Image (cartoon, rainbow, N blue to C red; front, side, top):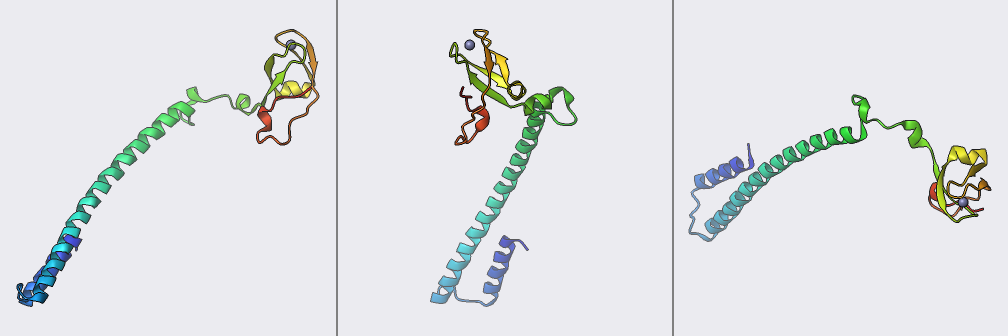
Length: 144
Ligand SMILES: [Zn+2]
C-alpha cells in the first residue's frame, strides 16, 4: 500500500464511523486527514523527483567514467596510457651556484652525484641536503 492509499483507507475508516464533520472532534479528524493527504502527495512527488535525479546522476556518472577512461586510460585503451616508468621518476629542482639558473634533474642524475648546468655548462656535484621540514621533499630545491 502506498502512502496515499493508506490515507484514503484512513478516510474511509473515518467515514465508516460516521463522525459528524461539524462536531469539534470531526473538525480535528478532518484537519488531520487533510494534512496527511497533502503530506502524502508531497512525499510521492518528491520520490518521483528523486528517482529522476538519481537516474540523471547515474547517466552523468557513466559519462564521466567514459571521459576518465579516455583521459587517464584503462586496460582496454592502450593508446592513452602513460609511461609508468617516467611517471615514477622523481624530479628535483636545482639552482646552479655559478649562474643562478634553476633547472630540473631526475633522481637518477642525482644518484650519479653530478651533472652539467644546461645554462652555463658548469659541472656540478651534488651534496644532497633536502630540507627535512618540508612537507614535500621531492620538490625542494637542493642547496649546495
Ligand atoms: Zn649554471
